[in-house]
Length: 489
Image 1 (cartoon, rainbow, N blue to C red):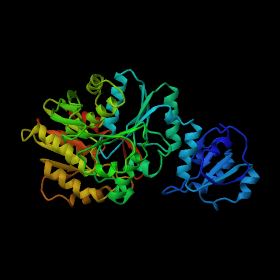
Image 2: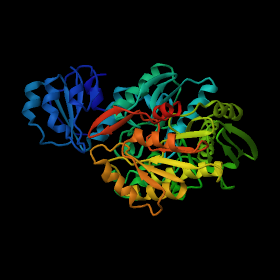
Image 3: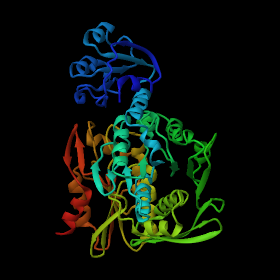
Image 4: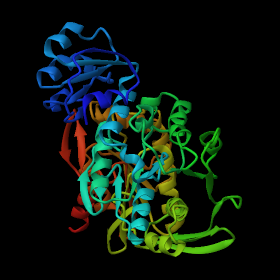
């Protein structure tokens, strides 16, 4: 696509320099990745301002630069290098617009389903993918654990990629004959306009609880970010929301698209009832259009009944036969790090991504509901560094109140001192049922080796992650692998 055509897709304040009539070879916001004939978008990040790297991008062959700081580089530079200066009000919005144009408005050529919420995004996405594939539809997935083009797995570093990478992935999925794509849409992505310009066929709101306040600062800002996904649905799309979540009225206010509710309230369009679960799975029923559907999944817990119901709702409203949806739910494999169960004899270990207070509480309540007082419950957990500090003592209190024994350990301390994080967790604990073992492997080892033969051990916080980040360095670490190592001894 020619540069002139791409410029026409932008809301431009001014164009200076030389607009070459050449096909653009790519869109980049990282100057290190710029190739000859590409467009560089200068974005003001939290730690790095892309405007500082405009000269480098031009030297590497960028034929145009999109920027919002008019004074970043003199116009003479663009004239001398025969490149174009494209001044816009907001570089992040502009990157979404130009990426949409470069990748031929790909979101309008597929059925794109966005899923947002504090918890349940990943599991719901996996179930939706399973249902569509059970119906014979090749499906892409964009999410926290990995991205998939059908069965092909592509490693993922962000829940929702930046807009240029996102459009590129969607275009690759389209070229590989994916008719449907299900995508986790994080609050960061919505606030940072990574999904700007995409056309969503459907959206799902799972739930919301306090999280990511290190970024959003207030719960109201966090909620407003989630709301953006629903605000941008057009009349030809539809939305699914959790009627039981007290924040849903805010999410769906000023709606344009038709909306459908899911939950345990009898007023829900998709009414969830008769939930039963144990360590082997979950059974429940959904009433929709005056008919009851019996649903079974190997995924454990009431929250997974909700996740399956969200998937049932969005796929049946997309035209999938309800019985096919039920079969797709039944066939969904274990989602890595989401209430993932391993064990030795009667001793069970549950690896779960519960990394905020609400998810930790719900996971422990699910375990308590299953084991009652027949089995001791151990919890091994920590909190991530350089993230929301307010949740640390709250998680300590929850773990202590709902467990027989707690081991506080290190999570991903990043650039913080692990013991400083642990001491903040400790402040919320009033019972004497905990110990501190900073080394995460030693903490897991202690829980496995010293617990009773019929204990249930929750290892919380990292879930699917296969690394631990300490002082900016990532080293391989998997809770599941470490648990299995000591269970086998």
